[in-house]
Length: 77
Image 1 (cartoon, one colour):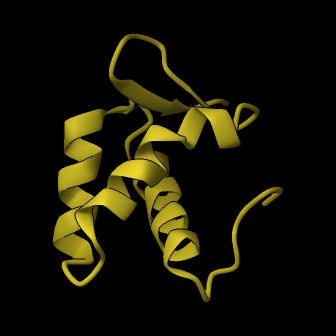
Image 2: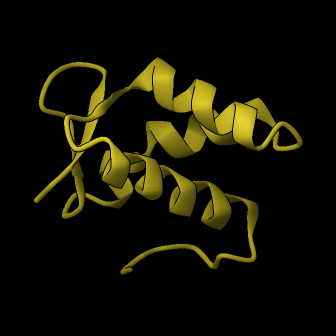
């Protein structure tokens, strides 16, 4: 995936998991749900790192993710 950080990095791992979650939830996920699920999956990652990844999702992947309404992230199909 274009612009995807290396899977060997913390952010790369987080982004790959976020895309898996969004793939499984085509209706989209709210920001708080996304943060909570990722924090539970990776409790050893700093919460601010996870938050930053979610926060920049649309900015870094504008061709893959959009916000159909405030606070909801959804894959572009």
